[in-house]
Length: 357
Figure (cartoon, helix red, strand yellow):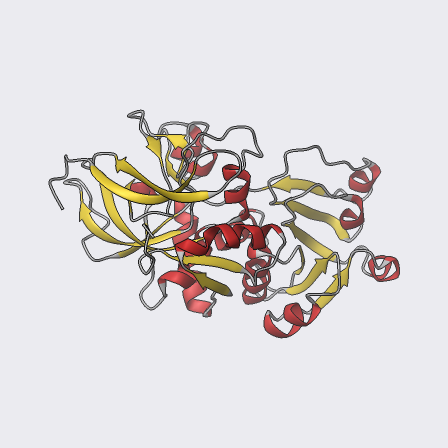
């Protein structure tokens, strides 16, 4: 494997321009420092945000870019100052791999809100080297941004929890919405939405799935355990459901009206935005004022919450519903994801893939 000071050449699958087409790409991993963990990637989830990044939807993409931020792997080597992990541990890496460690969010253990956070790909480390994600043989990550995967949780099941599961768990915890007996809504039944249903149900909530069509009713009710299913274009059904919900987790990643969903919230209800949308959303102020309602947002979760969420999922026996693919299927998977044709998360079996065809 070479000394810790030696750069290693590895293969990942990268986009080289905004077509977003991925192909094998050889690059150097940064040197493994004293605080770093060298990880051999086993599995990596496929998130809708990966599409935004590889296609430069947000206007901030740098190429070549190796995406993938729901990474589970095995520790192969550790730096001299690493205390949390040992060789052979199965660990996870999520959306961020660095922060300043000195600002208010960092000192408050909510480092995901650090203004100098470092994304796990399409970003630059403090040493100037680009960060590359989990669609690759290996990663080198600061131990602070690595979590232990609980024993008994399979890598492919754990991977989507590191973004989709955490993204739902964090706001429910932060906004005081973990207690049982609440009525929650999950808007959009994709990767994040399906974990929203599972986590909210495990917390003892009455869960309504809100969708644009009737297509996913059976899955939502019978497979995921939702209590009710509401089609947003069903005027009568939406009117009947008015003022019913304590919160709505809005996972829709495209422009959509907010008013129909604000009307479903009780007094002091919260509409929690999760979808990355690069265009303004609209609502009229009385919709918020007359029920003292909140429109808020939440971004992934902290490292502490990641550990809590994994333990919660283990304790409750929660697993994501996944379709496991090999790396050479990734471009087709992205096409299908754009059409919402996956139940509910693609996970790449990186270790079992031939990265150079």
